[in-house]
Amino acid sequence: MTGFFRQVADYTQNAISAGKYLLQGLAVTFDHMGRRPITVQYPYEKLIPSERYRGRIHYEFDKCIACEVCVRVCPINLPVVDWVMNKETKKKELRNYSIDFGVCIFCGNCVEYCPTNCLSMTEEYELASFDRHSLNFDNVALGRLPTSVTTDPSVKPLRELGYLPQGIMDPHEVPNKDPRAGKLPAEVLDWMKQESSKEGEIASISNTKEEVN
Ligand code: SF4
Ligand code: SF4
Image (cartoon, rainbow, N blue to C red; front, side):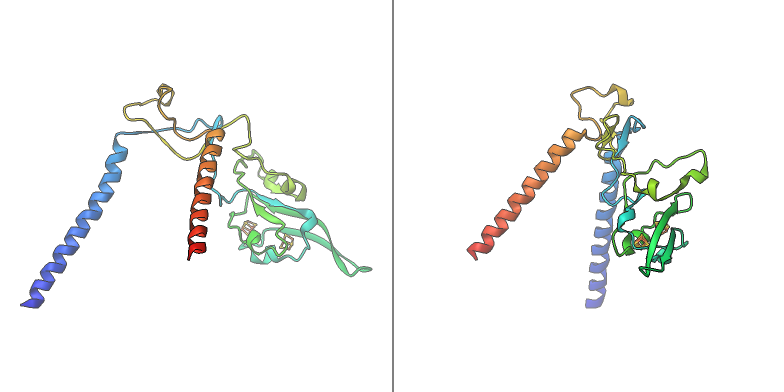
C-alpha cells in the first residue's frame, strides 16, 4: 500500500514539474507575442558579431614557420603553404600562403593548432564576390587588418536582435522617447564601463572578505 501512495506522490510531483516547465515556456512565447520583429537596416545598421565569431582568417606572414600543421589539421587540407628549402641555412623559406574562402568551412582548426599563433579568426563576414576565384586569398589579402562593425563610422552597430515596442509595427515609427533595439557605440561603451566597474566592486569585496578571514 505504501508503494502505491509513493507512486501516486511521484506521479503528482512529476505532473506539477511538467506543468511548471510548460508554463515557463509559454510565458516566453506570450512575452514575445505582442512584439513585432525588427529588420536590421543593413548595410546602414549591422549586428555586432559575437566575441567568438569565426569570420575571415587573418594571417601574419612574419610569424609563419611553414610547418604545415594548419594543412594537416584542416579537414580539407585547404591552406597552401608555398616554401622552398634554403640549402645554405638548411631552413625553410616561405614564399606564399593562401586560403580559399570559397571552400573553407570556417571550422577554426588551423587557428587552433598553429604553433606560432599567426592565424586568427576575425569578425569579418562580408566575403561576397562576383568571381569565386577572388575568394582565394594570398598572404597579402590574408594579412589585411579586418574591418570592425564598431569602428566603422558609416554603420550603426546593433548589439543584438531586438524587437519593436508593443503596438509599433514599423521600425521607422518608433517614438524618440522609446528605447531603440540595439545600442550605439557610445551606449555599448557605457554599458561595458558599468559592467567592468561592477566586476571591480565584486572583486574588491571578495578581496576584503579574504583579508578579514
Ligand atoms: S600552422 Fe601556422 S606556422 Fe605552421 S604553416 Fe600553418 S600558418 Fe604557418
Ligand atoms: S578554418 Fe577550417 S576549413 Fe578553413 S582553412 Fe582553417 S582548418 Fe581549413
